[in-house]
Image 1: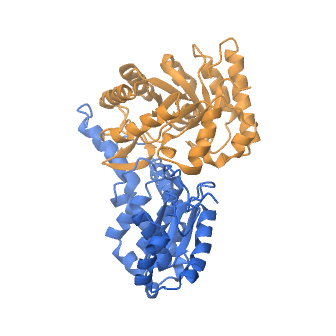
Image 2: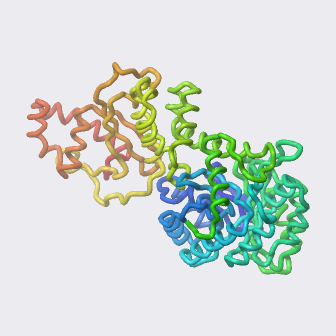
Image 3: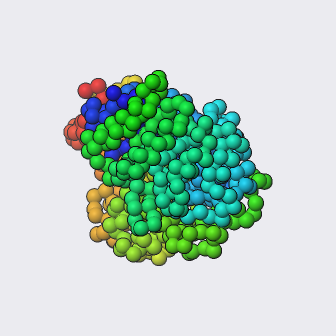
Length: 278
Length: 251
């Protein structure tokens, strides 16, 4: 039985997810943008999911790293969604997806710079004050740095320190970034402020060339990412929830169950002496 | 805008975002050679997918090149406002109406088709409305209680009955189509209406009245004097609306 591992709930699962016991997640994660102001069939489905599992959320459009002002009207709707569904965790991306008053609908890399640290930290604090909870910020994958003046890890640690937010420790993203930018992922983890880790994401990716991986969430997790996960959680002081993300090429539930069980096994091995988190 | 962000950082962010929208490669500082195009590709892939899923009939109507150019120009020049990507396609309608004179001339029913397709998404996804507690039993003497998740579309082209590719300016006229979300299945249903039934539904809704009370107006406006024949015509229609969940009935 799962204690630590949840699954990203996809509409592609359909009713099979609820009608079978093949997947037994500790929680489910949804992107609030896909569910806010939604009624009818999908609201009914979400109600069934929420009756069975705790709900975590992973936002897409907050655009915390944007030069544009925060969209407080949107955040108000997110807050209402969080309250309505008794959401346990609200996480977002350390990136930007809106600029010059236009949504981009994907995650763009922020320049690793001191002024960006101050800008983003101030915004995170404002969002946390508004929501009355800490924001959990994800390390995103990126394919090129832009105008960087500091290292990625310095950038992330500085924001964690200045904003007092929490960290979504995305192990696949760290693996992808280390590969794409030619650094050692374990060394990166050593340098990261792990005291802020609240939540972990695990996913698959696609290697598109000899020197580039795209973070697709469309494949199974590969062995080196499992190894990095085991290494990473051995560095944590306490258990945290772990999510299996699968957004495309959704396989049969049995295949997802195999991945979840493998993650659960690693967690149990590492944290069996700890209390369960969900 | 935060005072913390320096102009150069702001400019770098703006250049990257602009590139994702227009595909014209910018002069960005310290980027890894050959990698930037992935952002444009991924971003536009998201936009293309959202628009194509929402507007399959329009994709089928336009040539592949026309569709691609339309959505490229839309994403480049329009500032998408909705943080929910599934709602973003709605913004294409106004954009196309104001900025695509060549397309709208070639396809006079294009804007109506976009609206028609968006309505299906809108009704499928819309927040739940409160349903009335009362219901209708007697189709003649009681006011029909309608599903609140419904509307009559007043169309200039027969989009609900004819393949959009075969519609031309000669089809221009007045058509009525009822759209509603079925309360049990949550499926969105389209139902073509004659002008009389469109009028009848509207009159009952607006007047909070029943058919019996509408008889004088029906006689005056439609010249219908045979009440028994009228009953025989309306009853099956009423039964169908009840069965489909458009009328809330205790039957």
